[in-house]
Length: 133
Image 1 (cartoon, rainbow, N blue to C red):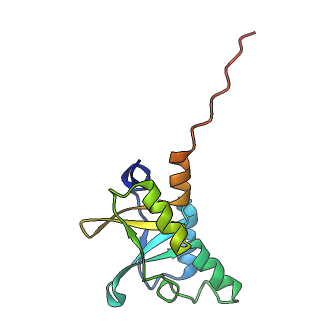
Image 2: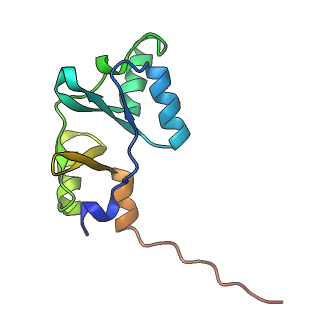
Image 3: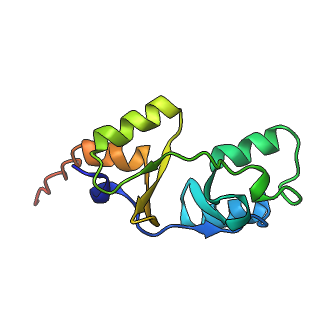
């Protein structure tokens, strides 16, 4: 199975000036764990994850005054849609992260997470047979 089969194609993209609270609210509303940060002044594409927000708050920083650009990972490992899920899982394990931005032709095509991969690798639970009385 390939990354294109597992990735989410609806991607939250935010700007570097978003506060961490704004980013957290957007991520929470969409029930996702990462946002792509588009910052042309800092090299283009980065990623902000729930862990980045948690680390900031854990340090006592205010989510209302801290901005995404200060917490964005910019040395991102990108995946291709044609990667196998094994390649994606290996990259995540090696890098110690849970999300990969998927690029296709230099453009963001999606995000694949550990959860996406697990869903593909785990068989769907069987539905309980209904018993008529």
